[in-house]
Image (cartoon, rainbow, N blue to C red):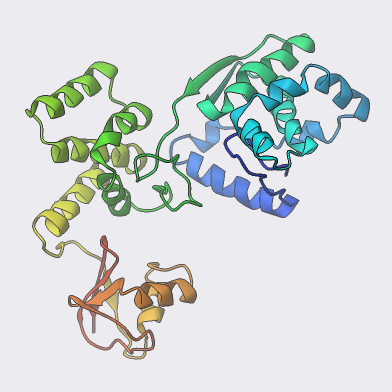
Amino acid sequence: MIGDPSDKDILRPQLTHEEVAANGQTYADQAFRILEPEKTSIRYNAEWLSQLSFEQLIKLASNFTIQQFLTRDNFKIRWDKGDAVYLHEFFYSIMQGFDAYALKADVQIGGTDQLFNIMTAARKIMVNLGAQPNIAIILGILPGTDGVIKMSKSLGNHIPINTDAIDMYGKVMSIPDMAMGQFFRLTTRLTPPEITEIENGVKNGSMHPRDAKMRLAREIVGAFYGDVEAANAQQVFIDTFQKGSIPEDIPGFKLSGTQTTVDILLAAGLATSKGEARRLIEQKGVKFEGAAIEDSTLIMDKAGVLQVGKRHFLRLEK
């Protein structure tokens, strides 16, 4: 509800209980692409944070100095610019530290933007309260599809987990060559020697960067969707982008003769709302038999191939 300020040089908005619950569900859905639900426990920190007294909060806060917070880049930038730094933002690290204590955490895993919260706040609070300090596993930050800026849904440079194998494969193939090493290290099951061999191959010319990236895409998609789906996604990519053809194995859709393009996109799950479907059409992102559709009210009553974006195809059948 506070809004995590860890990786931002601007004030993060506070959230309502409802927004937090909705976000939490999406995080769980994504996590369960990897974790096994029956072996996973989900806890809400209101369970213990809502029970803290003001006296306890003062004691927790006494473990830290204002200087510790103001030397952090995200706060320092705002301080130097004369922008407001709010007191409640400091509570985030204290809350996360107390979470580790309440959960009796052995290990916390996070990106380098969580270094202070895990290494300093959590361990200090746990020791102060008589608990064994947890071990920190700190990982590098994964860049987005631009290869530079941290992957972020709000910046539009992310590769969603809850998409489909073909879309994920295509998005991985769109990352710049320079980012492949980071992606191999942070998102695949390959060992360091295997990754070094691939990087050396690209450097000395014995491996084409495209082939290295296809290996990367197949590894990532395989982790989330399995090897069969990954192989299919790779074949679709080859057929669509390297051969310039329409994939053979695409889903069919029965036409009723009264549906507009917008209706079909919604019914086929290629758009989440009518507004999104209209925007896709307005941006010339929807094609029928290779020609862009310009009228969202057009009644689709002919058999043929409907293409949405670069990676999604639908075979319309009468």
